[in-house]
Amino acid sequence: MDRKALLSAMRRLSIEAGNSIMEVYRREDLGVRSKSDASPVTEADEAADRLISAGLSKEFPNLPLVTEEQAATHNLDVTTFLIVDPLDGTKEFIKRRGDFTVNIALVEDGVPTLGVVYAPAKERLFMTAAEGGALEEVGAFDLDEPGRTVALHVSEPDNDALRVVASKSHRDQATDDYISLYRVADAVSAGSSLKFCLVASAEADFYPRLGPTMEWDTAAGHAVLRAAGGEVFDRETRRPLRYGKPGFRNGHFLAFAPGVELAAE
Image (tube, rainbow, N blue to C red):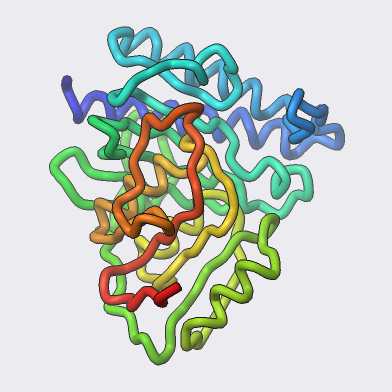
């Protein structure tokens, strides 16, 4: 596998999908409807999914592809695969809050190793590097010419003054009760996979998620955080979160910079 070529394609397709999403975002009618599980989907989700899926399938036909918007892919039994959430944070998109992202990741033997997270409304693009490490691209997001990049590394957390980030649309009393177990200097809310990236870029120390998510919600952000020196643990086992689980469903997890002293439960 040519990892550099794969990352280049993931970056380009993320930006193309972001451009497509923003075209819908600027319209008055977002084309919102409900899926079978009652969660919302928009024309932007579907357009981005078509674009990304077509590109990855054409350029990397030997890599299995799992994507949120194609139910037929949710029954695959794989440990090495590409996984896509074409628009993570659909609720944020519908509310026009800007905290939505395009997510593409490579999982190898159950571990997310390459990832791109693009937040087009925020004009932020985070990605792993082919040679290791994590980056934020700063620039015009040209499709073929990457802009200037800044290396990312997690913080050295102060356990007497932790900076915690939590979900904007899914925050509940259980999450607040869990956060209260820590000495917190700052607690902010953010949408989508941006929360992983805020920990990766040392803008936060800790992101606890005490609710269900799917692997396509987390894989790209997890890859970026992992490459920046961070960890994502299954809350119950306190072991690294694995991918390729039945139905691609996650349990509760804790994403953090090493040095955060996880509370005993």
